[in-house]
Image (cartoon, rainbow over all chains, first blue to last red; front, side, top):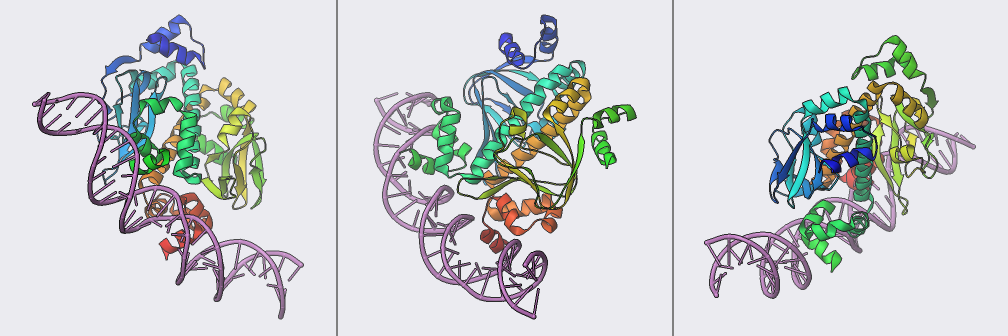
Length: 187
Length: 187
DNA sequence: TTCTTAGCGTGATCTACATCACGCCAAACT
DNA sequence: AGTTTGGCGTGATGTAGATCACGCTAAGAA
């Protein structure tokens, strides 16, 4: 369990046992059931989360009550409403479980303490942030350049595992089309 | 000129004269004319750029020859084809000047040296990366939730200065609509 | 068991936006 | 001065995808 977290860090940086123990002391382990919310749109956001197992969705519900999915967070992903988390403002997004899920979470204060004490953790998160940024850019381009059918293909290629775990209504919402349109694309 | 760069860093971290001199030694100052390319789609990407003055566009041209704009980089912005820069792969985007532009640029190697020597620079870039990520998320949501007219409004509000500096064809391409559609929205 | 609800497909219709095709004007070459 | 080019508006028409409205099936809940 802790091993998952450690292995995850050690993909990019190396840690002694003492260092990892120190890092770990800043995190809390938690379990959630399917349908539970980690973040509710409108509420405060106290943590950022590392997914040990399970599946979450980060989504925004617009005033016309439509849900738009920013990302599906699977094993080994970091997820939160980053803006709300970093600026201590209220969430504009919700984060909830599509499956039973276990996470390590960390508060902003602990995060800052950890960074101050261990520059290499900042190095780690800079790399993570870069990958996240690049993935988002790719998705933005995909929305700008591709039709719904093409975006679906790309998603299939990039995250084949998702298809087995997420229902089509949610996939459609991630792709930016309606359930009906996605259904017609696949059938 | 160097002052611009220093002030920019000092919005988030503080630097002694010696430290700034050290930082500066990793950068090169360059000037480009309107229509010049800093990055060409398909070529290698050797630098990331800090815009001192002027205006650039980062864009991707798809196989059907349509240009899609990822961002307009104004004064004080950092810009590159990040993925190509960080992984030393070929650019999938172009970066070119909409106005005469001056920049500080840095290679990946110098960047890494700088980070290794000065953790606080890594701290600085982590914050920048976070803001970039958050801005991209906002834009993604805007594409998912809003009509062309609404996106135009939002852009007006967020970057009023852009309207004076960028022609409508490019604005349309940033918004993800055709020139004609944008024209009909505004008239 | 029966009732309710979630997931999915599908037809009919509607609409935001794209595409194609003009014309006008002002800037910029030659 | 004349000619080309870029920027912009606008009409007519086409189309991807939304919306509304069904019905079917399977899984939970009472």
